[in-house]
Length: 394
Image (cartoon, rainbow, N blue to C red; front, side, top):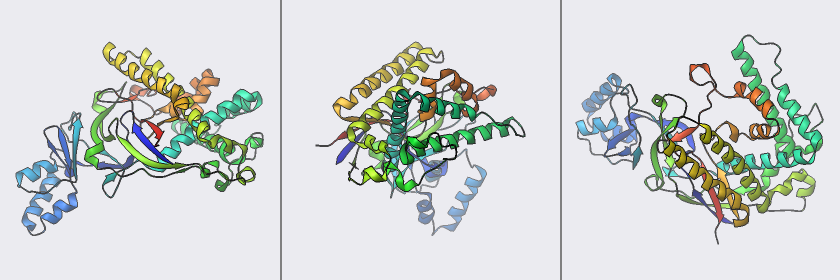
């Protein structure tokens, strides 16, 4: 089946690499991105000029850009693409910023199928555990006990070492319960020796999602500053982002075979499109409600900014509520999703808020002035990132 993915807000799915100031030029509010190797090749017949440019880079690693060099030496070379800039190109030290790069294939932008599948997996994990906890008190209590036991670290060198071990405990806990949900079934809950099951028995193997079609960067990308509330504005970072309302096409299939009943745990039943829509809706509503609560209570925004953000979140929540009936799949993808987008944390906050509060400080990166960073990440125009909707093409 063909599905259309529509970006409801800016989205960043990164390569982990950054575009340096020696690969871009600024021109009237737009950024031109170059392939620096092509610039070097264009100068291969002029070694002295190439040497001069290399020397300039060495003397000014962050205070000049490729655009200044191209203009100074009157080098005429076409950029790979050009996109709009919303934010500051230089930091408070008057240095050019690096730009977090969006994933591409052969220079074209796409949404990886693995990213979509991962977001659906997270929503299903939340839905399946939530349903089971409401159905079976004993399983819920076992989960909460294991969650709390992650704090039990007896031997550690210092607080940093203690925190590392606690994080490792929570990572193992999540892997164990993911394995129960997707591979082994809930009969393994009370087996103290059970840790992980064979990946070949993972129910998500049934779900087949392709990468999206490829788009020209100039058609779907923009570059924006992303800032963290609660910290200095000096910590803005530029990102390549999918623009809101951008559309991509992908294949989405859930083939069913009778033998799945004997291969996979019973949770495979959640892989029907109806169940997937419901799971994604419930998870999205949970995240959006938490975000709305945060912005209602924050005093870090002007009243009009707060109203603007809450209005967008309320609209998104209404969409999530009607998504199952409208046959939409609402998802949050990519970077800067926040701490509560981790399934087990959102579940614990709902079922045992005091325990959640106890654990929070050990799992959230430290902010500034030595307190946990509870900030939200926003674009320069006050958008939370990552939201999209999948709709089936007729």
